[in-house]
Length: 427
Image (tube, rainbow, N blue to C red):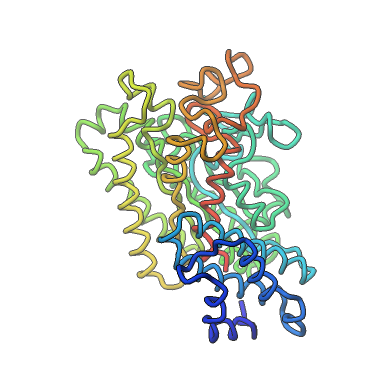
């Protein structure tokens, strides 16, 4: 993105912004934020230049200023991100070019991001039946493990997409539909291919092979040169790992007898490291990878491993935090190794933990059980279905939809965190 005149002015005269902010660096008065908005986004300032570039560049620098103060004041970073995205949207509207911020979104992972690939597999891990999808568009179950939208659906909308990239195994994954990306995720898969084999899901290694097929199909549709531009400019998302622990390691004597949780985490991190290198070699340049969630706070995990307790299982959460530390270290190392790679960790641990431990602070009232059935064991067609007794009528106050997966309302909170962490990936 070219640097516009106002960005140069802003970088040179950062002190002007700081004069609009109280000495402690925190915007306490909403009117001050409005002043910033009016001053930097006033249309007359953008005459004869690329308006979208201008507003985006200005907003990014404002965001960085707010971010620098975020450690002192909780919530400031989120406010800055929201402000930044508002200006992006205004820039798009003002330029008369309603194009998404990235050409496509390409997704790998498990049930947290599966949009229907498992519908076409012989597996019990499916979500293409009610009550899944009851709050989605037209109230139709699509294979998403949620009552409505996934966090990545909401993120795609924020980036400017009006439709979602199709599940790669679906009939919709053809022709021009592939121009906005593809989703290779499969519920019950993980970093560890053996996890997917246990449940007849698509292993991560196979997801990468499907991506190679996708590259060839894209080149046939738009030509090699344009396809390459789409692939290098796309946002890549990887969300997996929870199944490796909850649905494999903790219940697999072969693994937990011969490997400590730390050893197993190292195995998974090694697979992740190689996956990123392979993906980079295939053209990916913008990658966001989610952390593990607080595994011990998933209702199903509490039921299975909580030994009668109603609270989060500490040892599982510690395993997740240990993995996440290794993930952050590896991502930082990869960023140094590949300067052209924009890579970020999307932390879902802390926002989901906050929702579970203090749901009322964000408008939720139930975090111990999911909406579907009893909410303590239900997931997959065997337990969460139309005949499940006790399914709630309104999931908006529930953190979890079933015993593992967040509700659409919780996904909105998680999507906000993804947006904050991923701003550098789309600029």
